Amino acid sequence: MWKMHKTQQTQRSQRGLSITGFLIFSMIAIAAAMLGFKIGPAYAEFYTIQKAFRAMANDGALKNASRGEINVAFNNRATIDGIKSITYNDVEVTKEGNNLVFSAAYSARVPLFYNLSACMEFQPTSAGR
Image 1 (cartoon, rainbow, N blue to C red):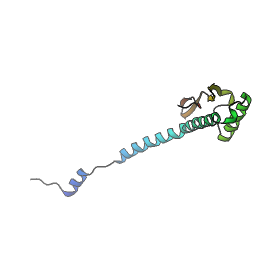
Image 2: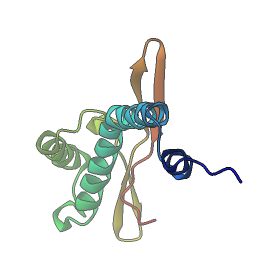
Image 3: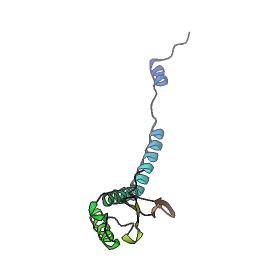
Image 4: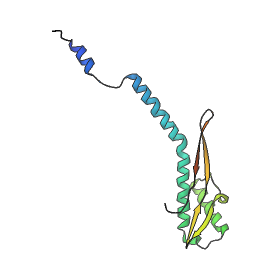
């Protein structure tokens, strides 16, 4: 009966990631990370706008405020939080019962590479969902 040499047995029984597999995995992971770094700030700003809307809706001083006072309050929050995607002209204010509801709709276009861009549409609101 033919016996394999000891090194041949261990080479056949070893399993693992080859250098080619590692490079392909690394390229996919880097591409996903770069995509996240590109579109992440747009989502972060969306959540910042939504947080500002909720804070304004819970502000008792704004319950009976005029539109001008609401605009000033939004501008102050937008300046502090670094909101640049919308202005006070984009903010819609409605009243549901005794509560004010702030909402807006905007889109953000983020260039990815060459002529490829990601277009995201956001609708932040202070209404609970």
